[in-house]
Image (tube, rainbow, N blue to C red; front, side, top):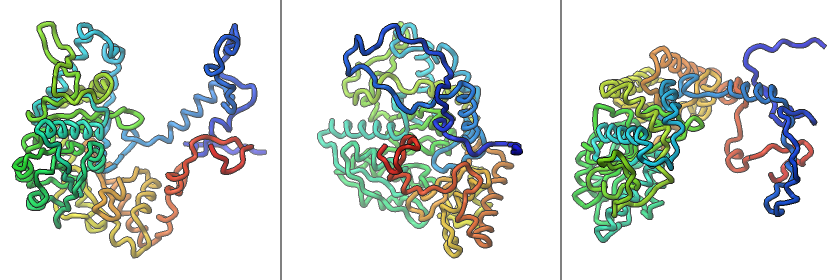
Length: 497
């Protein structure tokens, strides 16, 4: 039989289990001198493991290398995921984070022997205070939502110290999606504030909802529509006049660096997503990091331990009587702190401001080029991201999901879809400052091509994607009935995993 030549990227890679061959091995493990069951109690002896693949080392390496070629991320091409700030992660930051003094320092290292790491943490706190206009920072929180929880716990402690923890939190419909959950975890009920006809919160809406039972307003600025809340200072004054506090979600801080400071907008507390604004990796390249910055009112409640400078140098201290305590083991995701500070020092203050200006410029370039073909959710200039919808495409039987799936065939990851919830059929695009005009033009042309196909060949969109390793999934079934392990062919279909 004539062998067919294989060229390019292979998209049909078997499971590692399907490559298994009885007796094949990539390692020669010596037999134990004694059988564990002869000297260990039964509960400590693992039974034989069935089903592990028997493969050679070259097969394992080639298998996972081929799978890695399917990866899609900011290091491979444009990643326009709205509300996520998927900017390029500089390789230089990775090299700095791998320096032995940072990579190998143990959290139990005595303070006197870890002064370099502690100085880095102190310098990062100083930069974050300067950028946000706040007075103090904790680096403990492990992610953005963890930072929200930290901030809300401090708000609750603040009100409890004044004899009334209060019961409610105001949250605009355009706020970041995790805000209601963070408030609920701290025992608060939430009150939703609807935006006006141009997507912004009116001071009068806050004034009507604000009373002595409201602990805080959680507001995202710019909001998740990519719009700057123009009345933020007046809104903060209304909340403060009733004894409430302002939590400003920092998820969209990438639009403000060196241009505006949340502390000057009346914010009392905010989280800072290092994995968004300061280029540390997302997801599998992470972990994330969500430091929390506070104003003077909440500074006493910051988690412990906190860095203090003494005659002997920096040390960790828990001597803060009004603290909310620890929010996690040790001191935060230190590797992310190293990467973030490297990014800040490389760009400097002027460079950070330029990054924000370019991010806003890129989003508005996309907005202008696609407006008229795609329905813009709210008119006018946006900040770091723009939100379109599938309005008008229903005439061709095409939905947001179809547009997103077709983008995969054209070589681009899809924008965030169906969020924010206030925009039916939303397409949320955040290009970030690290993309060139050439890249933005290529993405825009792909979006315009999809719009033409929706009119002329809608079935092409309904069937997409067809060029990816896996076609369109039944996403509802995948969420409700996930298959979490491989099942040998001998097992009956549907057998419980």
